Length: 167
Image (cartoon, rainbow, N blue to C red; front, side, top):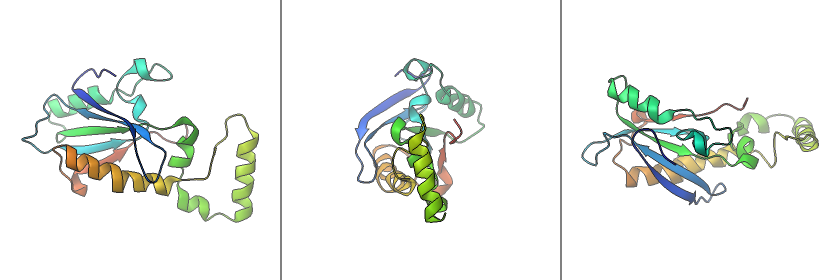
């Protein structure tokens, strides 16, 4: 993977106790230095962020170009991007809000799973798992990033963004 600006550190099949192993890419801007602390932006669907040649639809979100422009023009504090790749078969189960789903009547939940199983592109290939996906980010990935990169660790410097369930 080749970003237009900055450098990517790739972590193949980042292991987790809570979710299936997935690739994680850390984009560091050209200005990155161990002598300075950077904010962190965690982004879902990380495979879509930096290089159109590596995406399923040959399009990218241009996260590196946009971040570089924001940093260069002083529109934001300096930050790195942590791209968390999704796994196609688990994407919806990782992202769908678990607590609201589980608060539905059991009959409704069961019918949603049945409907999902009967269509060509099911909404759920397995049980909703977003609480564990969040545990992965908070208790495993963020501590790894905090330990291995020169970052500000507080909530005022930690952000999360990504795709919607609609796509």
